[in-house]
Length: 179
Image (cartoon, rainbow, N blue to C red; front, top):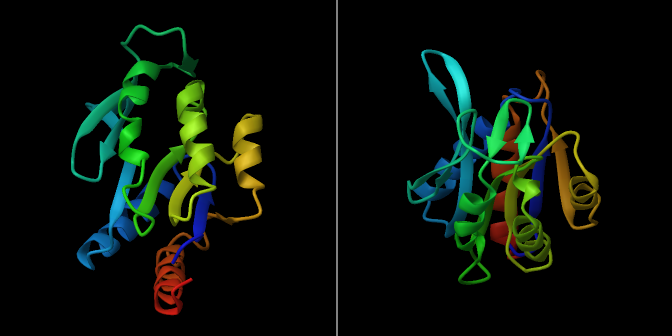
């Protein structure tokens, strides 16, 4: 299943993380080797205050919040670049069969030069990648989207409920063929 590199994109709150989480759960249940993280909102009384990374073994890392001190900012959210960088080893594969889960390659994460380097390098490894990427972004985000090995799928209201099955089918077919 090497070189399968699927990125989903779409507007904020369209369901990219939900799709990643559903596929990740499916893969976990079938004992696929996985590494990586997904993002979740930090909410209090229904109000979004920031974002945390959740590793696939359940560790939670706050990397963006309205109340942290940081010169890096997207909207009202300040980004803790050091916290993100300290947890980049969760993306480094231990073997070529591990599927790398990255949710997401976005503006906040891209403040980190180390994050960009790790992500870039991953796209040239044999490991399969399932991730999400900002619909709009900086030059780095656009470069990743246009890599020839990337299969970019845009999520919208019409397809978001079928994309999970579509991607799972593609992963399963690649597994059977051994590609």
